[in-house]
Image (tube, rainbow, N blue to C red):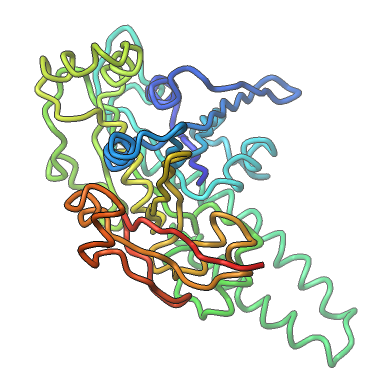
Length: 361
């Protein structure tokens, strides 16, 4: 999973990114030096992995992972007449989801580029830039198809004319300020558009970067935010302090602020929900590991996530739910109680399932 963080200057996006990656991001810059992208792969915290590690004492524990790209170069007018800087567009296009970080804190020492702090306005600015970027691509494609159709044989024009009609529909929607994800599409149209990687077709989440002493986020405080996009309030500066603490000091720090768990843990879980993903586990003396699959994946798909050979030679999957595993304590006890069951390739894997794949290649 790959997440791109975008936000206006002085939104605290880089603070949040540093907290998420614990400062491990590697920077890259454009030739003109106006764009910097910091990337890092981070573990997705999961208490279930921790508990299974305590039970099985493996030599190695592997969490699910997310790549986080902190993308600069997004501000009012940055999409311009010709779209985003190519490096910015490439980074955003490669992401599975966009995280729009908007400022919700006051700080006289850090002036807002729009003078006042207004999260609703900032979301509108970011969305407009994403829409302008997609509209530029669509309009260029329309121009190319219109120029190509007269030169195309009559028996081959049908496909081009269908694409032209689709692109014109997208252009109309984008011109009205509607993202691509809100445009009704047939199944074959959805498949066709995947190669374009339109930014407004991607799942998006709004992250309100709140002050250190801010109250818990309530959506009613920001009635102008889009209703169809998830919103999460995060105290970015505080999260960075938490991330910088040694592991044994974090619990005391969280307790002093009355926080049950770091907000970044919640943020990463929400990213999974946004993309319709879930985790299943493999366990043993060698390794306890979380694997990522889409919700609704069947057993043979889960086997393929581990290794293609397991999918190719799939016979059966031994399955036990996480809660059942905790109740049994050991695999031997799970077998004794009949909680470990055999499932075929079409079994729909459940979030938190523990799988052992039987296969023969």
